[in-house]
Image 1 (cartoon, each protein chain N blue to C red):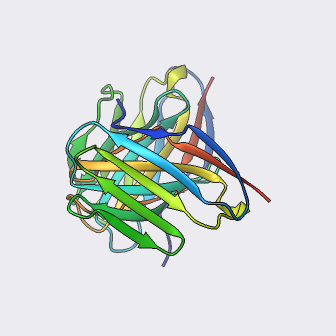
Image 2: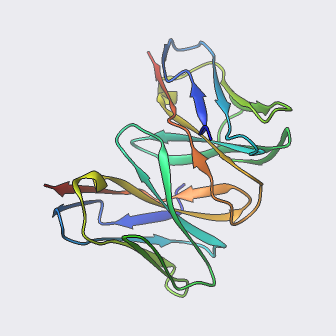
Length: 110
Length: 114
């Protein structure tokens, strides 16, 4: 069964707007990572945040982690059409066994 | 540096047959893990290999098996295929096994069982 749930399931925004997606998970974690998947392709790693970190930035990406609420959010600022993809959060507890959320499908309209 | 390479990219098999998928990790990576992605179940962990040893195994039947070779290349095998095995099979590699590693995915192998 999946560890996480992303919210919303689908998001449609205009180019230039910000996109926020949320991830909730069920058990304690060591790390949380966000991945992007273009339709029918492999997953691309975006950012890793450790359980003792609260916020992390990478370019136009900002990730927050609230371990007390077992939730994380991914903010993409100044979105572009090329950001259109599905976004997944992944948590790990043991080794490289990752538990992926259900994903948020983001559509950025030019 | 070449990424994770999976072959074949697409294949069609008949129920009852078996299939072998191959994965070449990023050079220097010793951990290889496999995931199944379906519309209904999402991404699910199959197993992880590190230094030719299975480290972790997901909740899949014994029809799903894998192995890793001394050069870190990995194969997964599915025997007695069922229609429900139709999925995108993703391989991922990382430098090491253990918490905090970033795993890098290949493009996947699309398996259709008819």
